[in-house]
Image (cartoon, rainbow, N blue to C red; front, side):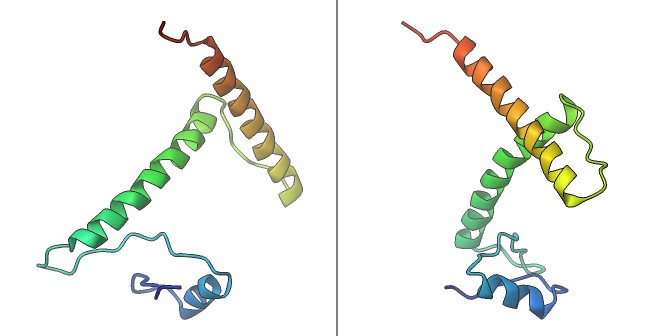
Length: 104
């Protein structure tokens, strides 16, 4: 596994937790003051942004179109509420995809 580079201010136990669980940090790397960001780091940041954009699109749809606000007592109820919202989103997505006409 590669060395994790976390921004300053992150506790060392967070880095240890990621390494222990075989996780990879998806935190963007900042450039140093008055320096150009290396191309390799810029590409890595762009890759992370692409993944984040796909995930946040789903959550934005759930929040705005479905009015999803999780205000429950207990993790089990919150899990069920989010799971039901995911199910509704998937059904809506499936109906939209099936409703599209394929070009002939």
